Length: 415
Ligand code: ATP
Ligand code: MG
Image (cartoon, rainbow, N blue to C red; front, side, top):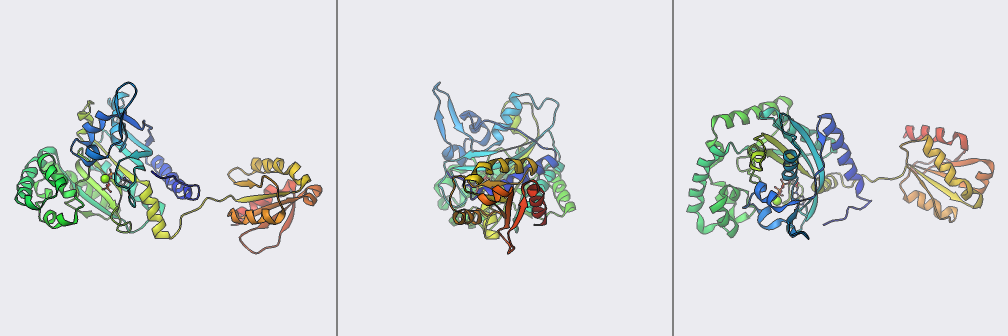
C-alpha cells in the first residue's frame, strides 16, 4: 500500500481533474459507495472461482460477527447501491465513482494491495451504442491525459447460452492437455475453464494459443451486438484489435469486454478494462437490468505518463512571498490576504518563520514559483513590494501595494 506524496500529486490531480470534466461532459453523475461491503456481495458478484475471491480479498469479522471485505473493485458495491436505493425502477443511470480498491496480491511494479480506480457504469441500456460511448469516453480521457501508444483490445463473450457450447469444447481441449496444465489451471478446468485463457504463465501460452476461440460459437444476437459496437468505433475512428483470448478476470461479464493495454509498463500492461454485465443486477437480487462499465487503474496510468514524458507535472505556487524584517513581518500576512482577495486561483506561498533575505530567496527558487514578491523593512516603510521573476532573467521592479495585484495578474497572464 503506497503513500501518494505531495511531489507526485500533480499527476493525480491532472488525471482526476480531466476525468471529472469528461464525466460531466458525457452526463455521468458521481456516486460514492462504502469501501467495505458484506463479503457475500463480492463472492456472489465477482465469482467464487476467481483469483480475487479465492485469494485476494482483505476479509475480516466486525465486532458484531459479520464478515466484511475491503472492496476489491467498485462495480459490486455500485450495483448493490442501485438496488438498495431503488435507482433502477424505470430509470436509466449513468454514474462514475473514484477511490481506493484492495487486493491481497503479490506487490510488484503496477500491482499493489491498495490501488485507485476511476469507474464508470451505465445501467438500463442494452444496445452496443452505450458500450461504444463508454469506450469513446475512455479514449478521450487517455488522450487528454497525454498518454500514447495504447492499444484497445476488444472481444465478445456472448450470452451465457452461447458460451455454454464453447465451454464444453474448451474443457475437452484442455483435458486433452491436462498433463501440461499448472495447479491454477487444473482448478479452473473444473469450475471456470474460460479463465485458463487469462493465465499469465508463459509455459501455457502455446497451449492457450491452440485452444478453440469463442468467436466461432457466438449466437446471432451476440454477433450483432459486437458488430454494432465495431461499427460505432469505426465511425469515430477509434482503432481496436479483436482479441478472441480476452476473457477478463471477473465472472460477471457478457457480450463486450475490452482492455486498453500498453507494452511500456512490463507485464502489468492493462490500464483500463471493462465490459458488459447484463446478468449481474438480477443475480444480486435486483430487477433484470442490462449494464456496462469500465475501471481505470490510476497508479498504472500515472506511471505510464512518467515513463512516456520522463517526469510528472509538479504543483508549485505561482508566487513566493519573501517577508524579512520586523516592519515587513508586521504587515506581510495582511498584504498576502489582500492579494488572495484580488487574485482568486493564484497560489501564493508566504514565507513564515523569518530568516535572512538570502535564505528566503533560496526557498523561493526551490518552491518552483514563477515570481517572488519581496517585502523587507525598507519596502514596508515605503508601502511598496519588490517583484522578481524567478524563471527568466529580468530586473526586480518595485510596485506600490495597491498596484501589486494588477501587476501580478498581468505578469501571470503573459506567461
Ligand atoms: P490484471 O490482469 O493486471 O490483474 P485485472 O483484470 O485484475 O488486471 P480489473 O479488475 O479489471 O484488473 O481492474 C481494472 C484496472 O485496475 C486494471 O486495468 C488495472 O489498471 C488496475 N488494477 C487492477 N489490479 C491492480 C493492482 N493490484 N494494482 C494496481 N492496479 C490494479
Ligand atoms: Mg488481477
